[in-house]
Image (cartoon, rainbow, N blue to C red; front, side, top):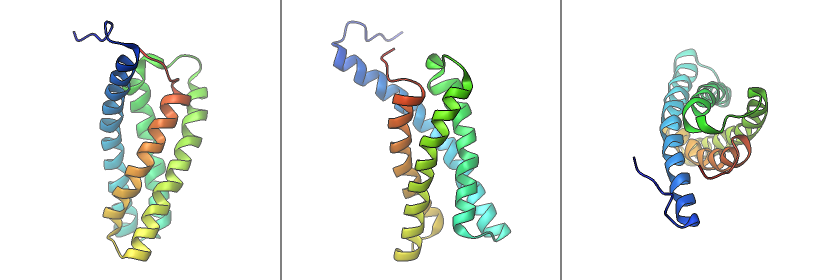
Length: 144
């Protein structure tokens, strides 16, 4: 097993954060699959308005990613009542939702970019926001 115990504290901290971010990206890829699939289904198949479709798709992916992050990405930090982490995660990710939908809307309406491609840019920007704040507030910013 690889150990960073002998590393200087800043290097060990950076390594742990990088490893956790890798897990977060894998979870994010699953969430993005849910998001893109539901966005396509709701907008293209059902015919729902793009912003409504995107909002619903993101919210559903938030539920999936919370469960995966709770049980894998930050499995070692889930102390205290689950409801406290939920109450922190969803407001943070709702701001991420606004970031995602705003970028999606601007790229589609102002630059005529395909909505699924635009959604990737929005999701990428929201992912950075979501990771930084959830790592610190939802699951506590600490070195393993």
